[in-house]
Length: 333
Image 1 (cartoon, one colour):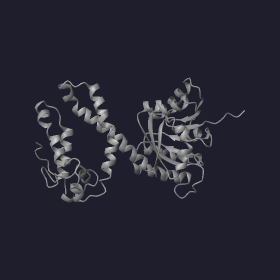
Image 2 (cartoon, rainbow, N blue to C red):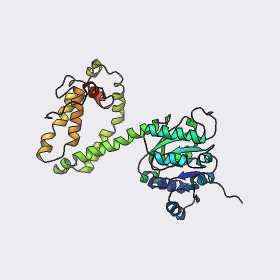
Image 3 (tube, rainbow, N blue to C red):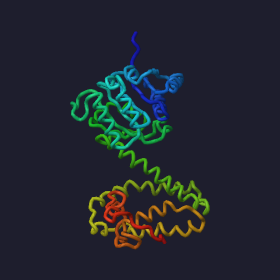
Image 4 (cartoon, helix red, strand yellow):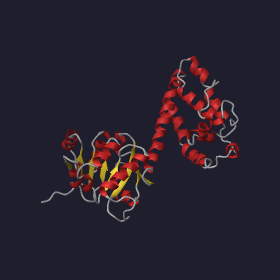
């Protein structure tokens, strides 16, 4: 009797790959797996689970152990590792007709680099028939391994064949929400923007932690109030996005939401408090520098412009380029 083939192939069992494999196995997906160091794969195989797991000594063998329609999830560390795997002997041939889903971290350009190598070793690419089986999907998993283990992260995926994502949705949705973003590169850009929200909020919290402690603020109460404000962010960003296309000074000065001068006063107001108590001012100084550059200097000619004029600095860099260097740092009070 021939054993049934695995429903999913997972290549790479680091922290994220192992978490995904365990989540899929707990959800009754049979797996074929491969990892450069066999010990991690063998440990996973030894765990008690309801769905079978097969360990392969080579990546191509792991692919062969899976059903021809099974998605191949590549969860290696970086772009170089993925490209090395794709170019390894026999691996490209093993992917013929398969959907290869790359989840290694990297930039949009790196996603396109991997897509190019995939097309070279497997065939296909943008010129292939849309109905041809298999192909390349580039993705980014938004969330730590613990989120993958619980199926609570966000998967951003891109491909020149949207149907590949739909065909793998039953598997992918086990790991979290699934969003198709468009052509290769889009999923990485989406991931950058979403993950940055975490870093920006964490940096803000850490920067304010000293003052919160000194003034006896209850963090649980703070979190409740923060959530109220954060809930308004999506609508606010959409409203600001509508303003960004018109870069004329007339537009920046019309219907001002928050002026650069108002924003500057808000950030500068905390400096005396922080400096008197030896609290670092890195975040405050960063924002003051950005605001001053957008305004043309402290109390500069564009101080009355809407805060969206900051895009000239952080999106286009046009102000720095025109002057040769960012606005000189001045007294921030």
